[in-house]
Length: 76
Image 1 (cartoon, rainbow, N blue to C red):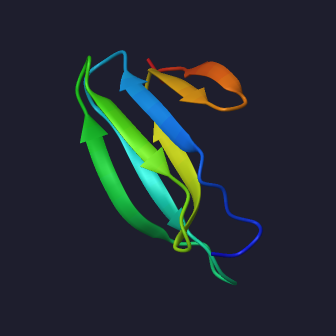
Image 2 (cartoon, rainbow, N blue to C red):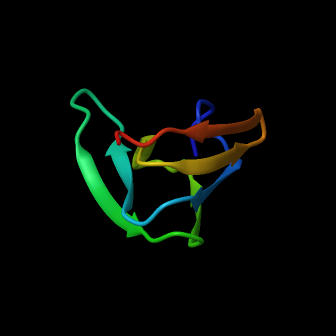
């Protein structure tokens, strides 16, 4: 494990149906490597790894990290 990685978890709870959670890769080229679709009330627990450098959330969801809590907004 490299020094720029974190063992902190990210908790994402869907507030609406169809929330997309997308994992992005590390390295010189950032690419999508994993995608999940959550329905209202579903919770996903994520972690940054040697392969995952970023997590993108599309749709209305509650996101909790060690740095605080935020809410993503729906495009509607």
